[in-house]
Length: 286
Image 1 (tube, rainbow, N blue to C red):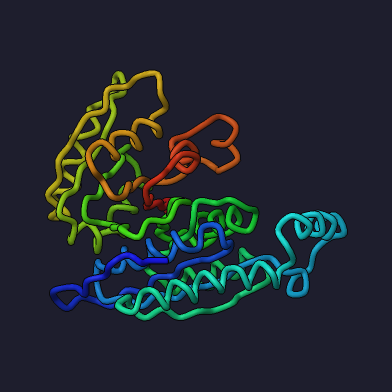
Image 2: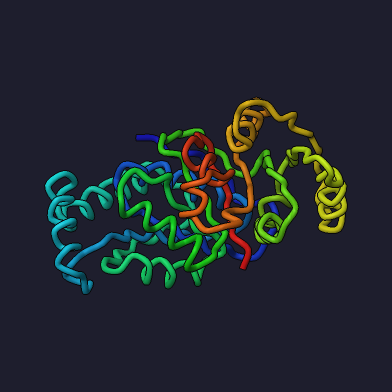
């Protein structure tokens, strides 16, 4: 099992605290790779935290107990799930001697409470694109409860993973994307290339007008490209163009409305999370 290369920053910069949430073994390797790759934005400490529901540490209803028992039949019990995640972590650390410091912590119980506590101490939360329930709960909590800058790792691992060399930004005017960009400045300032994608909306000033002024104010040089709408969703277009341009990550504002509303009626965040095969920075407006 190989790990992505890590090069220390060339100049001193504020130490970053990155929280890598590891709720499931299926995405643990990709999450760790993305956390290490993201650490190139500055001197960093990575805390790898296993979060997972455990009835012994939670108060749940009888109905929830039944659901968890059925889940244990398919995924194994809490101890078995934790052991699988820890095995991935140990193998990764053994294969990545040049990675920044990685600290393991097991934090079972109520996932919302655990994620909120861990995220509050971090500048970036990394979590895999969910496969199972615990991962979906962890991602939801990072976005909605902790309101952190979140980096969603793709499910597939890649030993050559980079994050932040070429940042592609999906721009739609609003507090969410502005706050995401401002919070992601450690990565944008060190990026070799920043590309901003935007779409037109009839009767509205072109989105790139405000975007150009915003990035200029931040001192970030960027290229601005208009996406011509087609029959695909905006989320699918963003992902396809980011890949075509060679971007190694996408940055968007997340969920202008609630996750349930977008799950029913659709939305860019939902479509991106459903299909992303590259790391995605997300943040909701606080």
